[in-house]
Every structure is written in C-alpha cells, then in structure tokens.
Amino acid sequence: MCGIVGCVTAGADAPRILIESLKRLEYRGYDSAGVAIIKDGAIETMREVGKLSNLESTLGNSGLMGGTGLGHTRWATHGRPTEVNAHPHRDGSGRIVVVHNGIIENFRELRKELQDAGHEFASDTDSEVIAHLVQSNFSGNLTEAVHASIQRLQGAYAIGVMHADEPELIVGARKDCPLVVGLGDGENFLASDVTAVMDQTTTVVYLDDGDIATIRRESVAIQNAQGEPVEFVPTKISWSLSQAERGGYPHFMLKEIHEQPTVISDTLLGRLDEEEGEVRLEELALSDDDIREIKRVNIIACGTSWHAGQVAKFYIEQFARIPVDVDYASELRYRSPVLEKGGLMIAISQSGETADTIAAMRMAREAGCSIVGVCNVIGSTIVRESDGTIMTHAGPEIGVASTKAFVSQLVALLLLSIKLGRVRGVLTKEDVQEHCRKIRHLPKAVESVLQTENHVRKVALKYVSAQDFLFIGRGVNYPIALEGALKLKEISYIHAEGYPAGEMKHGPIALLDEKLPVVAICTKSAIYDKIVTNVEEARVRDAKMIVIANAGDEDIKEVADDVIYVPEVDEFLSPIINVVPLQLLSYFVAHERGCDVDQPRNLAKSVTVE
Ligand code: G6P
Image (cartoon, rainbow, N blue to C red; front, side, top):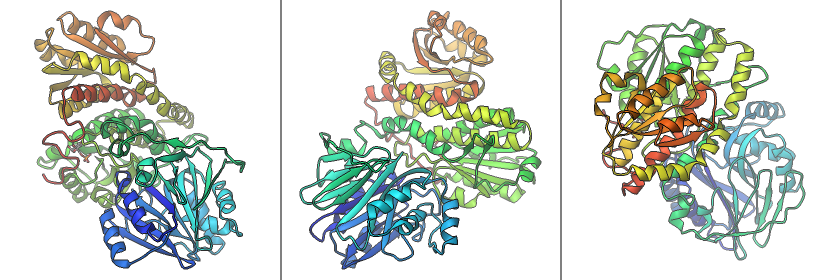
C-alpha cells in the first residue's frame, strides 16, 4: 500500500502542496518518498529513503519550484526500500514520470518485453514498467498513451502520470486501488484519498475502476475503460480532517478490521493459479527438491503472530503431512531446541523487527535450517535475514492490536501449506484447484461478516462490565479462541483466557457461573457435535454463552444467550472468517469502556527489545 498525490496549480508552490498532502497519506506507507516537478520543460525528481521528513528537508534546501507535480509515499512490495526503488519512476528518456500504488502482477513479463525492445530499467520495482509502457505508447497525447498502457497491466493500480511536454497536465487511472480527483478553483488535484486534498478543496470526484482522469489547471475530463467520456458528479466532503485520516472511522482499528476483505485479495494477488492447480510464491527461495526434503517445520513468532503459527500447524500437517512445532520465539531461544539441517523454520512477524523472533531465527540459521519469513514489512530485518519470504501485503497497520495483519498472515500461511502439499504430492492438481476456488470466495465472506457489525455491537454492550471472559474453540479454531482472548485483553483490559473447549473440564469449568461470559466458536467442523456438547456443559453451569455459529444453525440458539452468525465455509477457511466477529466484539467492548483502542496502555506495535 502506498500513497500518491498530484497537483496542477498556477503558482510555483507544488513541492509544498505535495509534501503537505503526502503527510496525510503517510499512514499508507513510509519507507521512502519522492516528488517530481515540471520546471522549464523538464521534470525534476527528488526521492529519499525513510520517513517523509527526510524528503521534506531535502526539498526545502533545494529551492525547487513549480506548479505541476506528482508525489508518492511508499510501502515497498517489490524491491527494497532504497532511493532507486522510490517513486516517482521515469521512462528511459526522463520525460515521463509515474507514481503507482498497487501491484502489477505481470510486471516480469512486461519488463522482459520492454527490455527486448531496448528499454533500460533503473529499479527493481514492478511500478517502473508503467513509465516505460507509457513511453512506448506515447505519440503526442498522454491520456491516450495511458489508456493504451493500462490495457496491458494485470493486477491492481492507482497511478499518476506526467510528461515534460505538458507542463499543466497530470493523468490518473485506477483499478482496485483508490483514487480521487480534487476540484479547486483554477487548480486541480489527484490523490489516493480525500485526506490528502482536504487542505486545498472539499469537492472531490471518486474515480471508478477503469476510469482515466485528464487533469488540467482549468478542467478535468474523465473517461471510462472503453474510452467513453464519463459525466461525473462531484462529492462535497463533510468530514473533519482528523476523521478523514481514519477514512471516516472513529479508530484505525475499526478501519483496519474493515480493510480485511481488500487485504485478503491483496495477499492472494497473483498467487493462485487455478488453471494449473498451483500456488505461486515467487520469493520462497525453496526448490521443489528442497520442499520434498523438509523433515520438520519449526514455527516461531510472538503475540498475535504466534496464533497465526498455531493455525499454520494445522494447515501444514493437514495439507503437507510434515510434523510442525510452534514456539514462542522468546521460549525457543532459551532452551535447547532440536534444530537440524534439512529443517525449515518459518518466522512469522508483521513488523519484521521483533527482537525475540530475530534471535530465534539466528539460532536456526546456525543450525543449518532454511528460513522463510512471513512478514508485512519489506526490507525489515526478518525479511533481510530470511532465505525466502512471503510478504503479507496488509499495508501499514496503525492500531497497535493486530487485526488485518493477522488475517493476511493466515492467508499467506494457508498458501504456503498448499504449496508444500502440492509439491510433496499430498494434494493433487484437482485438490488445489478446488481449494483455489474456495479461497477466492474469502473476501466476500469476510465482507458479509462485517455486515453483522451492528449486531456484534449490541452483544458487546451487554457484557461491557464483565470482569473476565473465557474463549473456547477446537481444532483449527482453538488458536482463534486464543486470539479472541488476546484481542479483548489488549484493548479493553478485561482478563480473558482462550482454551481448547475439550480441556474445559480439566480446570476452567470451576470458574463458570452467571458472571462469566464464554465466547464459543461453534461453526461447522468435523467435531461440531463435540463443541456443542462443551457449550451445553458450560451453559448448565449458568455461564453466559456468546456463540459464533454458521448462518442457518437455528438449533444453536437453544444453548446460547447470544448468537453471532457467520457464513459457512470449509473448516480450513473458518479461522479467517471467525476471527472477524471476535475482533469486532473486543473493539466495541473496549470502546464502550472508554479505552484507548488504537494505543492501549503499556503495549507497542513493534517490540524491538527483548
Ligand atoms: C507486539 C504487538 C502485537 C504483535 C507482537 C508480535 O506485542 O503489539 O500485535 O502480535 O508484538 O509482533 P510481530 O511484529 O513480530 O508480529
């Protein structure tokens, strides 16, 4: 996820306007930033690694002025966060520049084709192909060149494009990534979201997928994917700036919960080959022979990522039949684990900087294991020190309690497990094809869970004064019970425990009374009847039962005080669905208790110390 901005103005103030706009998009990524300004018939570009403030001081000292420009703040997906990989990217002539948010899935193929035609590339990014493509299609009309170029792009994009020959023009286009045009008085703007233009204007046009906007100082024209003119109706923004930064949501956590359908799509992008019955994980760095020879998998992680590891144990054992151990990194590093050559270590970390996980990884390296990092931050230590990686493409997560990053980890680990299973011959081509079909349905299923938000809120309000909560689940949903309990603890400060439902009678059953709410994950599974029995056991001891069940399960109402229905999916996909109502439940309980949902006390987003 990156942020893009553009402006066509009368004065010479574009650098300042772009920087101010980018500041509001820094939540979309902040590993490097850049601007390009048209000046005296040429384009001048400035890029800096790190936070936007670095670019701001370089620009401030440069004296660069101009009225038309593009800017970008980057969340790296392809290519490390270096200056060369920072946007804007140029074509070979340096007369065309592009800023891009999204992922171009077929960039390797396009790059090869363009290189064969003589184009020289400067960066490792997928985005640079767009600049070269536009140049190869340009014959005097930038909008037409962009239109021809996007026909070749597969994947997701929001782009801004400029040509040095057109000092008062920027062209924007989008597919599956947000893009708005800001309408000013004798000046117009382009941005990834409205927050970026709100200092300049509150009148915007939301572009639709396939739209191309031709933005000049005095006019804006929009055409659709077929090249036909679009009659657009501007929207007047009534939000305050601080609301707008959170996309209108009261907290980043709620916004991030709602981003999960998109995050799942992004993490799947380009990785499911349904036709061939294959999962493609290009940066895994394990050959098929390596995969066939794996004797054992050790998963290490901390916090929420450790719960993703627990789900992955189910996945890998089920789909690839490889034995899996899951350890807290802080535990593994201080015992004498059996780590051997031929073993595979999977290090899961949204930040890529967790000190214990890094230390445990280094132990595995010493022992001769291969290491795969499952991570959300490209260029982070865990990514750099792993042999192979699976990036999770959740975009920056601002809320300290992890939600969308967790879901993206589950998706990435599911893909890895299916890949391992296919290569080792446990899964047939047909099995993988069927799994792919079901996995593709996930974003829609999560969307429909999000529609239960009001009901979850009502349920949450009934239990805000509880002092303790118990979360129970079984099988692949046991780690989800753990995650539900952790989420509630982290943000509401209510004591909560996750337990495998079958273990209840070995201890926690002694706690049950009418003051204890029990959240039971009771969706359809091979052992559905057993967990219903566990729910009944708790219910007859007067516990208040909040049950997550599949839509249509009417009988469950008999043993529940409150039911939250979610769509029925195959059991292996159910953790990705079931965690969502638990996130919402925690959010509403914490919010109602007046807690600082996004920045809970004593916690940090990234724990870089032991
Ligand atoms: C902190 C965060 C958690 C996170 C854990 C592990 O405790 O607050 O949300 O799950 O660290 O972080 P990692 O970046 O390694 O996933």
